[in-house]
Each structure stands twice: as C-alpha cells, then as structure tokens.
Length: 280
Picture 1: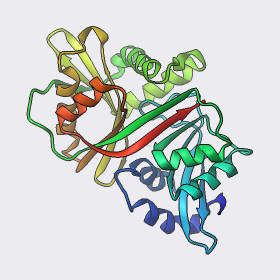
Picture 2 (picture 1 turned 45 degrees about the horizontal axis):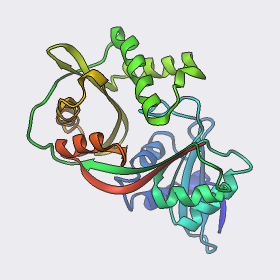
Picture 3 (picture 1 turned 90 degrees about the horizontal axis):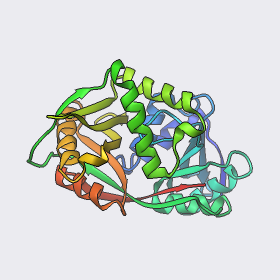
Picture 4 (picture 1 turned 45 degrees about the vertical axis):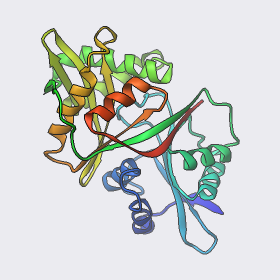
C-alpha cells in the first residue's frame, strides 16, 4: 500500500471512512470538522490507498493540541483504518515526522508502530474506549466551571494527573507552555470542578467534540480523597451537564487502572473499542 499526505479534495472520503465508527473516531472527526485537511498549521493528514485508489486508512499527525491528558512536549499521531494501511502510514511518517506518542484503536496503533520500525516504547498501555449515553443513578457532586482564580490549582492537578498517567511531569520540559495550555482550557470554559463539603475535590476536562458527541479526560481526584466515590459522583454530574448539548460522552482509560474503570462504569459508561497508548 502507498501512503501520502491527503489533499483537500479527499475530505469527503476521509469523513466517510471515519464515520464508520463515530464513537471511536470522535477526535479525528472533530479535527476534520474544526481544521479541515489543511487548516491547522504544523499538522498532517496522511492516508493509505489500497492500490486501486480507495482510501483504507488515515492518521492525523501533528503538533500537540491543548487537549485533556496530552503533554505539551510530544508529537502525536492518531490513526484509523486497515492495519496494513496504518503500517504504511507509519513507514511514511518514520523518516519525516516520527511521532513520540500514538493513541487510538489498538490494532491501528500497533500497525502504525510497526511501520515506524517498532521502536522500544517508554509507555505501552492497553486502553479502552468507554461511551456513556445514559447516566447511572446515584449521588452527584456539585459542579462548576473553573475560572481564572482556579488556574494555579488546575495547573497543579493537571500536571499531577499527567505525571501519574505518563510518568513524566509536563512542566519539566515546557512549564510556561503547559501553563498557557491550561489557562486556555480554563478561559474557554472546558474545565469542570466538583465540590464537596471540604472544597474542590474533583477535576475533569472537556475535550474534542463533534456533532452529538464529546470526549472528556484529565479526571483527577486528590489522593487523600480517593476511595470515597467522588470520581463516580463527579462523572455523573459532568455527564448530566454535557447531555444538555451532546448525545454521548466518551473517554479512554488504561485498562490496568481498575479504580478508574470501576468509577466510570458506576457512572454509566460502557466498554467499547480497545485502544492503545504508546510513547517513546
């Protein structure tokens, strides 16, 4: 198969390919809707054809974007489609713009990683996409949108969450860039805080969205407050709010993080696509 950057005249083909599974491809559909195939500076859309001109795989590859859980220092690739096509995309990116992180459907990511030459990963996580279309009954936290005065706390909690998940504090390489990313998220109203009797206990970031679906991430509860059901209560409240605008809420989580998986399932999320997070 042959891989190459995609031109704008193939937008409909890309949209049709991704729309085969809109839950799994929410990030890519949102990126396509927001930026188009050539609308974001520094980003590439790369596709692979089957030899007869039919598009069978795509990947967005570019500079990091200010999304929940994404470190500001990594180059990111998000693939979808036929595994052999994804491998061809990896082989194309390898000598030109090798990503430092790959996230997406497991089979597609593993194939793209092989196309990169199967470099030794620093992180190799089995993740799972979860989808919620109806909130489970149970307690809810009081919820509010983070404001400017909350930025120091949100910076601290966001960095702590990334350090737990990715084993690296994003402030080590680009502290001001990370703070700028968090300030932008707060300014745009995409950070939610959950309240209990003893103050702020829960944080959640609202990420990419497309038509009737939205992706969330960056879930954080203070270690001293874990094991009390606060993450579940916070997710229920967040989904209540998001369902006023969207029909579904998605997230992906490391399958080995059993407390987080249990919290999401108690909030009403159901298991969906197997994902991979690989980083070097």
